[in-house]
Length: 155
Ligand code: CTP
Ligand code: ZN
Image (spheres, rainbow, N blue to C red):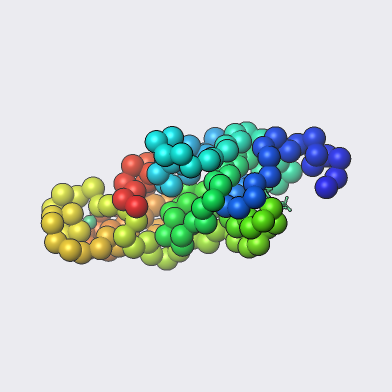
């Protein structure tokens, strides 16, 4: 580790879990919302906000101990943090490193705000949204969500 890294290491390394790195500055709370992290469980989570970064100027970092994220969770993170990298940590080492990729479709993760939509009126239909450049569109009723995606997360 270089001297510079040493100075900038604000949050401890973790033993096992997931580090979501390179989140755009100020967006860690959105990532926490996606993951349902609200402090109500005893899960150990560290958050760095507006940490200096060579690549992004300022970045946010979220470290979740003892939990490896599912692909569904990574897919939604990609919608609001397209530059993020997901590091799976095992025994203090980076076991896997993934750049998030915007999926073409997200299924079962967001709920449609249209109460007449077949996915919300009590039928056992899994939600399905197509990913657009600037939002997502319900595959059943074509309702488009552009902002506040985190308010529509159902996982
Ligand atoms: N990390 C951690 N605990 C560990 C190992 C790594 O919290 N036991 C964190 C690091 O602090 C960093 C991220 O996981 O935020 C990725 O680690 P690493 O790949 O070693 O860092 P970089 O090379 O800087 O990553 P990148 O190339 O993605 O910028
Ligand atoms: Zn719909």
